[in-house]
Length: 279
Image (cartoon, rainbow, N blue to C red; front, side, top):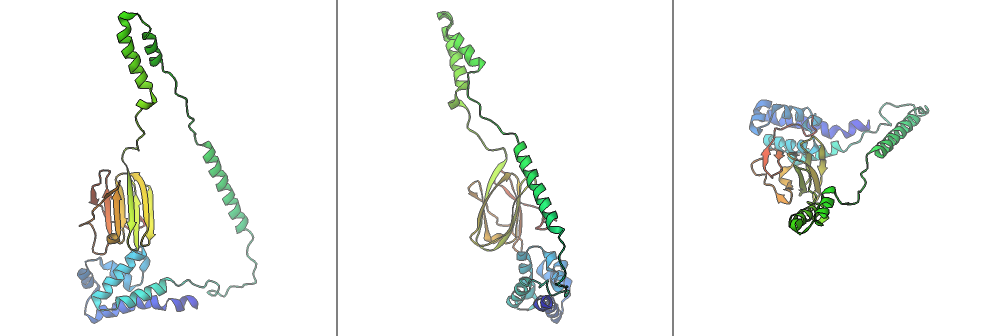
């Protein structure tokens, strides 16, 4: 079948890695100690369980380092992985399904009904949101009182005038403080010089940015600090917090990943590692 023929390259990766390791007389545990990785990573590579290793950039990094350690061709294995990962099974030929059978007419109306209900719900939610209306500036009671004091006899003119001026300054639009951003909110600019995985969340647990980004990509995110950042190819990522570059020296792991916590003052600290997909 088409899916089996296209997958032969991928199935050969694990066998070649296992054979190369055994030729060197190494066990999985010994090879893992040399590479400073968990033995389960090498077991997943030899079993070709690439999904257990997370994003594509992690799989390629582990595959290259393991191949070099056991004397295999990293370039050939990378090519085999790319060829196998790009294969899309031909679902029309797998089970020899009866093409004359009429498809069920139920799924399409049901799907349209679900979409319609979702659209109506979204419209109702938007219309039910409270909308603030602008209010014209008017004289406050304190300003009116200040004006009345200004009409007092000469003996009280000075105090009344000062009170009126103070009240006028308090209600003047020019004296109002400028709007400021929410406390703890930070702006993080991300630039990529090569293909890299990134995941950014704020202090409230909201996912601000996630995915695999190509060379030359730039993104700007805003969120409440501290921000949690996971990088798959940290040397290819440049971070700036509120316009100030953030140094990542000493926080990048051997496989190129980095787990960071960035506070509102721009201080960067290492965070506890976890899976890139938040599992």
